Structures are given as structure tokens and as C-alpha cells.
Image (tube, rainbow, N blue to C red; front, side, top):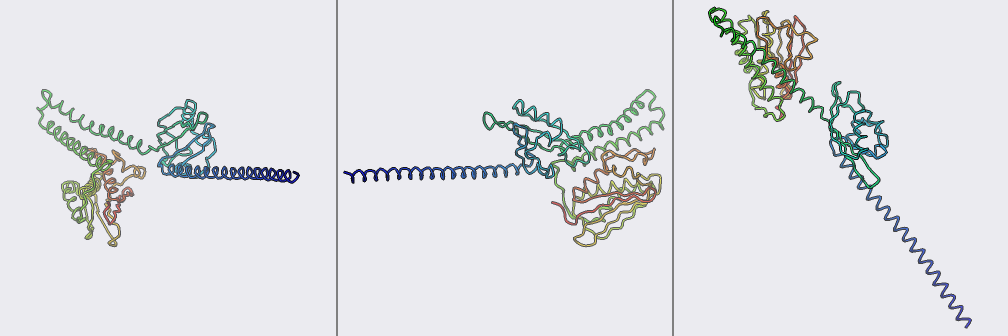
Length: 402
């Protein structure tokens, strides 16, 4: 009996020990499994966070996430570039963004948990202002609330730079306003002369009537030139402009054709035009290059109507792969240094250079020149020493642009 009890105690002790050991093993295995699940979850979360970060970095526009405490918890690469690498994570959005108008919009979105879409303008001093040549930058602002759960709210901010669009729109508005003014002036003159001519004795004095008709004709020519120039520059600046009609042509021949068209003006002003161009083949849109050369030579002649000006058209190309250097110069009255930065702007004219007896130009000629040269991948610059020499120098790639 004693042996039986001892054996029973041993069996129970073993069973208990085995149970304790099994429970301990189960707990250990459970702990290992729990740690493994936690590690897997963290790895998945990290992988998803990494993928999410890659997606955000692929966005072309700056993206910022702001938590309910007002701290920046996430941003993409364009934001880092916008802030030039400055650390902004975990900082208050008020301390980072600074601009009162943007801060007010974010506060409104957070307080009302609502989406906001608006356009804001920022001064050059703004911490994220782009290089807009000292002018305001303009941004499309989109704010979207994101509710992760009942108690957590994020505000996602997307900023799209629309500075170029705003500036282009302003340029178009200015263009229309200036064009209207330029057309209204000659039309008013023509209307006034017509009123005089249609009066009862308007045609009695044949000489006066003839002078009026002559002036009206010149203004009609000017209106036609303004319209033609407006069409040319609108084609050059249009977003969906027609591709250049590329062809290879002899540059010297093109210049001679332009000078021939100006023979009457050259003879009238007792001017001289010399051409010094070797055999150079230019690949480009001949129509636009004719416009370029015609405007530059005609401008040199008309700006110096009271002098016997000498105009030179020269070109050189050192090697086959070298760019073509094309220059148009004159020895006339020149351009004041204060006016040089503005001469390629549309409708800009150096008024003091105009003869009182001449109808003014369209104010678009040099703008057309610049846009046409740039459309071919080239550059143009102007230098002037009043009373000595004025030169427009163009650098044109040897290979045609696509």
C-alpha cells in the first residue's frame, strides 16, 4: 500500500510538473508568437509607410499633414525643396508657414473639419516663396480633413504653384488693354478726319482733303500692321502654338530679300545697308526669320529717320557645330541705358526717338523678334552707346530644335 501511495504521489507530481512546464512553454510560445506578430505588424506598417512616402514624394505639388495638435507630422519631397531642407517635422504649422492668411485657412479647416479650396498670394519674403523676380507668388490651396478614427483628425494641405498661370493671365489682360489702346488711337484720328471730310464744305479745299486722306491711309496701314503683328506674336506665345515650319535656307539670301523690301525707305532716308555674311545655311522657320530681320533693319531705319544712318547685318559661324552669331547694328542716335531692359516688352517704345512727322510703330516689333529667336532655341541681346552704335546680337543653335 505504501508503495502504491508513493507511486501515486510521483505520478501526480510528474503530471503537475509536466502541466506547469507545458503551461510555461505555452506562455513562452504565446509570447514569442505575440512578439512575432508585433514585429510583422511593425514591418508591414513600416512597409506601408515607406510606400506611402514614395507616393507622396511622387506628387509634383507640396503636401503637408498636420495633426490635431497643429504639428506637421508628414510632408513630401517638394516641401523639403520648397523650404530648402529646413527641418519642419514635429513643428507647429504656425511657426513654419508664418503667413497669416494661410494660417487662418488652416485654422478654419481644423475647427470646422471642412474642406477648403482657395487661391492665396504670398510676398517674396514668405518662407516658402519661390523665385518670382521680387514679385508675389500665387498658390492654389487645397485643405482636406482626414478622420483616422473618432478621436483623431488630420488636415492635409496641398499647395500648387500657379504663379506662371497668374502672370500669363495678367500678360494677356495687359495685351488686350494695350492692343485696344493702340487700335483706338488711329481709329479716332480716321473717324475725326472722316467727319471733317463729310461736312458740307469738307471737300472744297482739295489740298487739305488730299492731306487728310493721306494721313488716314497711313493710319490704316498702321492698323493693319498692328493686327498682323498681334497675330504673329499670339502664335509665338500660344500654349498650343503650331510647330515651326523648319527648312534649310541661305541666310545671306534671306537678308538680301529683306533689304530689297525696304529699298524705298532706305532711299528716302539716304541710308546705307551693308551685308557681310558668308555662305551660311540656317535651318529654321523662314517666315519668322524674315520677320526678325525685317523688324530689326526697319527699326534701325525708322528710329534714325533724321540721320543718314548706316545699318550693318553681319553673321559668322566658326565651325560646323558652332552656333550662328547674327548681328544687326547701326550708328544712329542709340537707345538710352534706362530703356534697354524694357525694349523687348510688348508695346514699349522709346518715344523720344520718333520723328514728329512719322506714324509710330506698333510697339510689337522687338517682342516678335525676341519670341521668334527663342522659339528657335536662340538668344538675343541688345547693347547701345547713344550716338555711336546700337547692336542686336543673336546666337542661334547650329542644329534645329525639335
